[in-house]
Length: 215
Image 1 (tube, rainbow, N blue to C red):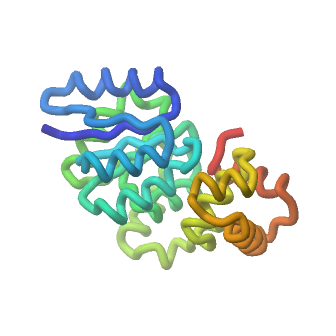
Image 2: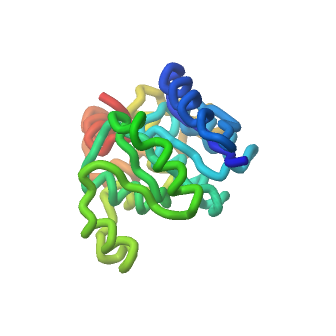
Image 3: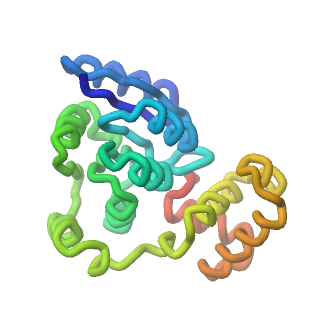
């Protein structure tokens, strides 16, 4: 039985994906998550064969959730599910460890082939993805691709950037992550220096531009 994790912050989307996937013989949705943090916890608990993860989710975005899942569960394949399409985003998806990328507009037609491909340890990238880009990455690794701006940040810094962009205060972030307020402030200052940002408004614009959060 192929075990599949679904992570999307919209109940109706998860319901539709689940119905579609479970029509396939031998497939089961073993867990559902509405944010990236729960997606990681449920993946560690259920150890799915494939995780279908929305790119833009609250608390922890799809790319950072993917990084954590792949680090702890290298046998779990990840399909990033998104409304967006760009070569920069493809680079980030690959660098995060996902080997699948599917546009939401193509879900009805391509979700089953995408999950089937990943279940067989084969990559799946839909849409107008440059084959040259994909081939270059898979052949030569990330060195020739160049790392995206967000890769300059540590995992904790990216997490705090997302939470700040979502409107949480330093105190709220400290409580959520079980850190001191001073530690949060240090990570915030370091992240903004690395990204060459001067204000919280700049940080929010950066998070929207890089699709860490939705506008």
